[in-house]
Image (cartoon, rainbow, N blue to C red; front, side, top):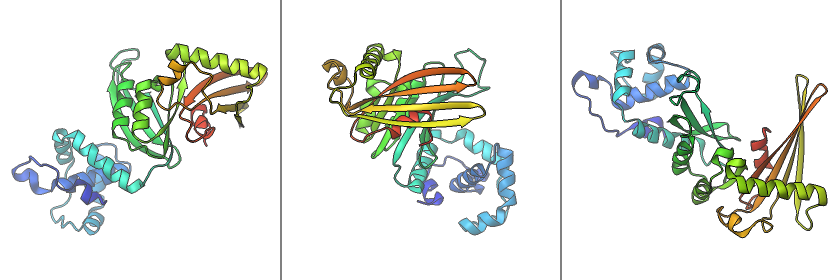
Length: 301
């Protein structure tokens, strides 16, 4: 799918002189400029003006009267249906990137400068990131603390996850999200903390007992890696077990196609100071970690 195909046929309510440029022309120019680093409409207009010949040749546009002004870009995007634009842009990215495989990490971040620190007006951006290809697949903005979960649900409703393993931190460890991921064709590895108190306690007890007395006949997979950076040494030890029969039946039944549990033990040393941290995870056991656990643990993979 070309950019021209992606943005052709959009509803256009403009009239008169505003139609000097087609809707597709303005959208394509804006996308090209922004992908090349333009941060505002003045920079977008300047980029297009400087590359008028390239735009004309590449897209076969006459452009005898020049390229749009920054006001033209701003006026259009103020009235443009953001949902329709986002849908077309995602379709183009999906065609460009091909079929996404591997790990898709979904994470939320608070945008600095979006409001007063500690207020409930801060803007939070939830992002779906294809780890192996380095692509940002989609983003969803939410306003106010505690709304990131709604953003995660919205992303999962539009992503095609067949063949992917979705990782999320403890906020995303929800039975509803696990069910959505499986319904979209994906696997999941979710970090578990005390927002799922009973599950977290069961995992801590299971791994503490196993470390002390062994895991019996269960097959245990181990993986270890060490990073050194500016005097800091961090060793991460990953443990994964593709068996959940030890777990209470109602607990494991609550998670769609739950098939494995894992632990990440991080040992950090800075000088003589050593700290140890354990994190736990659950997942669908169709395809085995520890590769997805590395995405939770901070490894590059």
